[in-house]
Image (cartoon, rainbow, N blue to C red; front, side, top):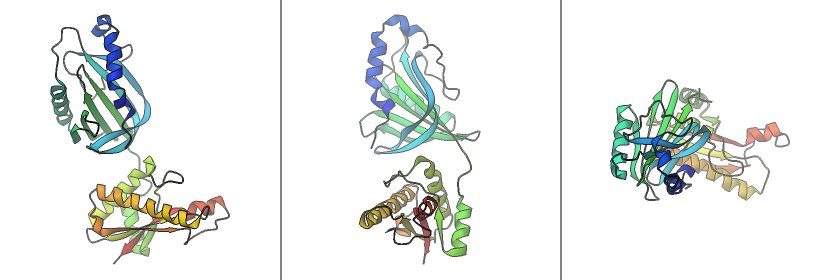
Length: 278
């Protein structure tokens, strides 16, 4: 599991800022400001802030993270000279209260696999999915916020179900890292739609079937397609779908639906299908 890069720099960043001397401790960094949804704790100033587009991983359990892409704001808070010092646990509890006051769904709080104190949340607001995480330290805390704009999914739960009802199977636009089994970030919403469809009908059982084009060793392609199907199965079970309702199958290049001699044909052949099971 990759630890978020912003978490790795915690102690070094704080040490550097403290070493800069008390003169800097009385004012916010140039151009920095609090995120409009999250007020700062009393007695703290903004020592450093980063803003821009990016992908960050948020802990949703002690040893499990989820990648979120969007507008990110990372703010480093340190106590002002003479301000009452707060312990890391006190900072964590105060920020948890803030998360709950604004209606956030707390995803994880406590320690991470690296033994960092940590809390994360998400909420929906004005067409955006707001994710936030706080990591308190001995001298301050960091607040990470990522705003993901919600767009119409490539396919909806209703569309998937309609296709299954009509034909008993359907290809879904789940995309993977080239040559690997990992999901691309944009496919997480497609998996969420599959999960929503399955939750709406607890009697529905599916075979998740991976297919590839014919470029490569057939045994390797078959193993890759099965690994991809299993990735989707695991994502669905993490979303709350009973694993007993699912199975993963890899066909490799055995069942093409188009001509592998053309790029368009190969793109059609490299697909993920859902097949209704009795």
